[in-house]
Image (cartoon, rainbow, N blue to C red; front, side):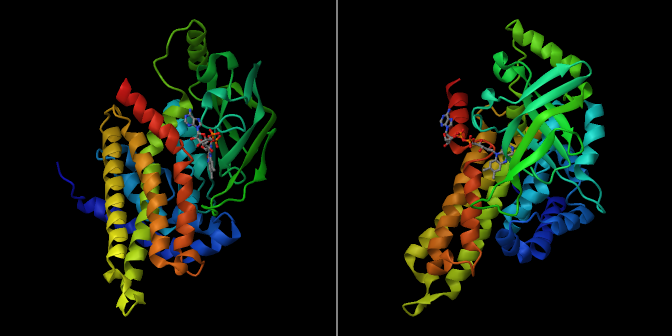
Length: 396
Ligand SMILES: Cc1cc2nc3c(=O)[nH]c(=O)nc-3n(C[C@H](O)[C@H](O)[C@H](O)COP(=O)(O)OP(=O)(O)OC[C@H]3O[C@@H](n4cnc5c(N)ncnc54)[C@H](O)[C@@H]3O)c2cc1C
């Protein structure tokens, strides 16, 4: 066992950190305020090669699994809203890679990213008004009509919903089969019958675009179903006979794979708050001494540091398990997401406390990190759902 990062990993981390420090941190407050999608930063990330398919391919070939967690921690240290604008496309890409055929991957992945001159983003749409945690209850329908699928439904809270060029939409072909009657479809913004609905205004990660996506008689060719028509028909036929495909839903499989990376994002926010609070405590004087000399402030900082370290260890272990092809027997992916998400909330809250009134106002970035952190106990599986998955693994 060796916890030391290699020279190559340290270089990667430094590269991502410098980008975050130079291009993200200075504009984070501005995008938080305006809630605009940070296209100029995305363009710079694309030009630098940070926003590219190559990064995901490099991550795929990394036997340690640490490529994405290392990059995520640094970029989200810069700003979680902008970070999600850069890495939100990773989610539909993972869905495409998890259930699509090789041909579909080669056709759609490049379009999701565009080019450095004209970068594009993509969205993964599962959630609906009546189906968030309960992904079995999706009502968006996909009906086969000759050589086409016709989709109708309402998706909500979709990251990149108003700005995506490519959407991966999870819909139900046969509602009686629950999640086994569902499939994923690739739809582009040029297709008729798909349009963004209401753009949400949010507590945190405000640079990230979140909106409704509406499907109204959206017609797409039959080959846009991920995995191909034959495989999907076969899966449905098995489900109708009550035979198990041995696999969980496409949506759940996608979330399982992406959990350690999402958890690494939360570690990035928590670390930003820990570093800021530590530095601030050395400068702020009360009762004639820097507050870092007060035992209770030291306790806050120590607890924050321990939580950040624990979260990172869980993230790296889960990422390594996934990369080395070992199953998450103890739901390690969920453990990392649960721990890191709750750590981000707790640590940013403690950072506000360490700064006192200055933690609560917008002159300092700490209040923003506190707001940004909360989403990590909600999206990609709430904390309650992660606990359920962990308990199920324990009790199996
Ligand atoms: C900013 C943002 C971005 C998002 N991006 C995307 C995206 O790109 N694509 C996408 O598809 N979705 C996205 N979502 C949706 C997100 O994944 C859901 O909001 C989340 O899964 C929770 O679903 P819900 O909001 O319907 O809450 P509900 O499922 O209604 O849950 C409400 C409460 O009940 C608890 N609960 C529910 N069921 C159980 C249970 N069985 N046991 C115990 N507790 C339970 C939950 O933990 C929660 O506390 C995003 C959401 C937000 C806010």
